[in-house]
Length: 386
Image 1 (cartoon, rainbow, N blue to C red):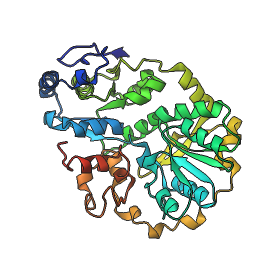
Image 2 (image 1 turned 180 degrees about the horizontal axis):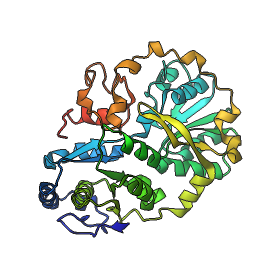
Image 3 (image 1 turned 90 degrees about the vertical axis):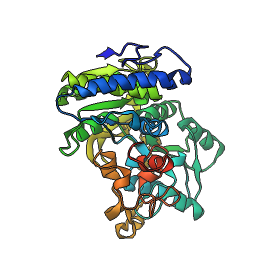
Image 4 (image 1 turned 60 degrees about the vertical axis):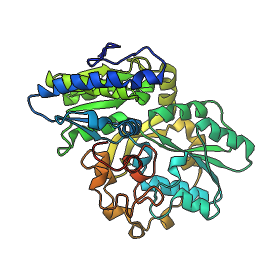
């Protein structure tokens, strides 16, 4: 594995050592990288090069800065399962709703409130009188437990980026009335599954720099080897993303596989050893459903047996039977969120996009989260050239 050299406007990561975000939004450097990308794509043997990113924050920047409009026709950039809210499945939401309806305080991230369960969301439960609160971190959730006498359940969602802070709180002797309902997910197994999907035809991955800060870029080596794919770890500013795509197209043109780190100012090969150690001490992996995609082996993070005392699933009898009227939920037949998160469809391919399904009245989870592709496209005009 190697690092893309800094400050090279012909494809390397510009200003890799800088701290100023404006440095990574320089229009002239962006045009220079785009010109190099055009040159590289023109030499491809079998265009277009299909690249999948795996982070909702990447999609936010791509849409906000109109980066797809800067890509040549021979480069196709598609969305992957990079929105943790979007892949949180209905049974997990049902568990959180049931705990709230049972009179417990449920705290979670704001994006989770409107995510549909089988028949209800946490927002519905709160409107009916349940104590559902928004927090910005696992530490905030533990602080609420310190102030309350009753049970406080943290509905913990997110990838490695948020799983590591949850683990830190669990290991730091939280209040005895604090429990975790884990819906944390682990990204690499999902990348393996999506890479195997025959109708996706991915030729390279732009991997999420925020998750790699925890795990390190080396975590992707096995995927690159197993699937003979190039993987580039990328940051989130426009020049980060364009440089990462350019490096991928270069590798695709050379028929090269392996992992490149195009975000060296934040990501190392080994990652954050302390955070990683805490995460793997607290959590174990198991097979679990990623909403709309598949049951994925080793992709769900659940609390290990040593932490049963803070595991809401072990401490509460969570009855969700009354919430599982699938016929009452319109998501099942009409929403294509799963296809969107697998790179098989764009939001504009959905008949409900911007009509029956809006951020104010979402049908699917992809229209709920700030990292959901449908919500992002809706916010920025709903065009496939975003």
